[in-house]
Length: 307
Image (cartoon, rainbow, N blue to C red; front, side):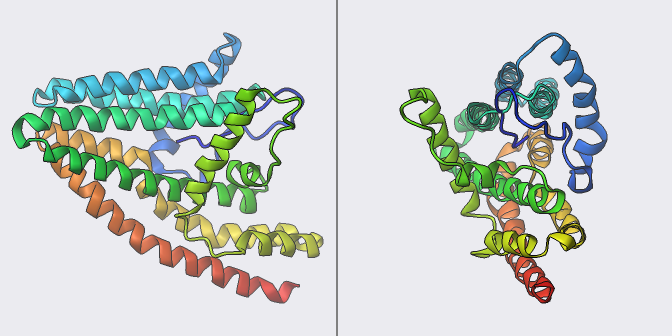
């Protein structure tokens, strides 16, 4: 997922591309280079970021239709290619929003919906195809895998945003969404108020599963506020501490699920992908969370003498 939020005119322009020092390797060397070339082309054609998100979702739904026929390896390959196209669109919509300075809470919600729709469609198509062989219980497996996926993806995405915010001094969709006051009811439309509420809910669910100790963000903010002359060195130390860890977290990114789904489908055993999602990826998250939590606590302890 891009994790970008989109807004209106007149806002300070954010960096267009995501931070490379924590980027997942297939994004860094394949997906995003394509997105980088596509973004200015779409901007010149005045294509909106939301249109790109919906285009990506369309590729995702077509991938689901292809995976429904996974027992024919040609359809499995088609599903994989279509999901790659979804990844490219998913990398492009956020870049396009930042390039055109058109971020908004509505765009953030749309982006999240389109991303989850892709995986819901693919999981549902595989479960529907598998149900003919295994019966209705396969849906329990697919739904359980989907829930685990949502938790793991949320944890990974917020770790990325925390790094962008504290390490790179960039905006964080998560922190901004929670700290931003609700829109003025007298001026804001009903849609704007609903999108604000949905975005806060979406981010709140993400923050529930990230392993960040209570009060860390407040302590970091106070640390930077009380030591403005050392802010650059504090952020540098943060990057040194957390960049290697977040690169390890990238195993929970959507890219590896796409690869896993394709391998399972190509071998005609997608049910084993669901099992790995539930037990394999969840075990990885269970290992990463306490280590990351301890890393946050240790970082604050090391930085406290700065005060």
